[in-house]
Image 1 (spheres, helix red, strand yellow):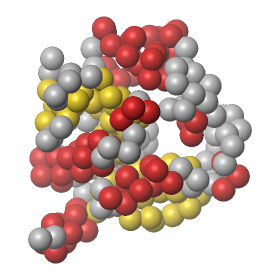
Image 2: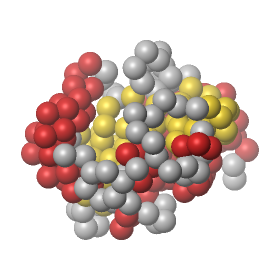
Image 3: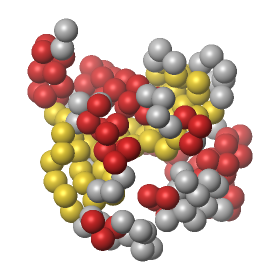
Length: 190
């Protein structure tokens, strides 16, 4: 197991070819997929033929970036994943942060813990200048994670979703934190 990052309660490790069952289970929960596909599960064929190969490809193309399996340290349970990588067409020093966790992990601070650690790693080890994240405007739980991770709302926009998802009529939001803002937050915190 190749560990990328360790926090107080989490291990973030690289995915491997044997993780398709974990991803199928995660994406098979309509509650997890509510703000992504409107609750439609991701098929095993999509996981094995598209998603997992894309996850694995990031490790080679973008050292230090990618998709990371979130493992709870005390139980060794798979909680979901985080991604920290440049979005297509974006500069390498401006990665996008994202997360998808099992419902059992919601409301326990794991998303904030992992997000803060990835933001810190980017600013301290990878010469990142700005981190961005986005979600549907109505996804208040995800927005709260971004805020608790030090990110600030920078814009509201309308994304071109391939399917109509309840709430998308309210648009999407982008949050971000720059290196300067992150450094300032660290000096102001006790």
